[in-house]
Length: 36
View (cartoon, helix red, strand yellow):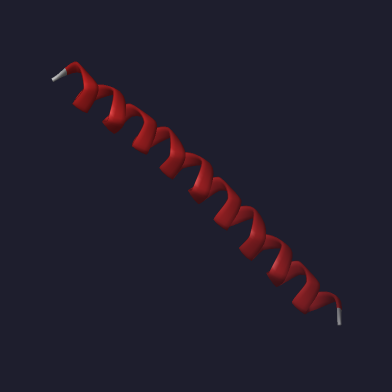
């Protein structure tokens, strides 16, 4: 049971990191797109 909790916590933190990366990338793409 505790393994499942650890997996869920890792999954949540990974998801947060991916979301932050995704936001950063889309922001960069939008800014590059408006510069041209």
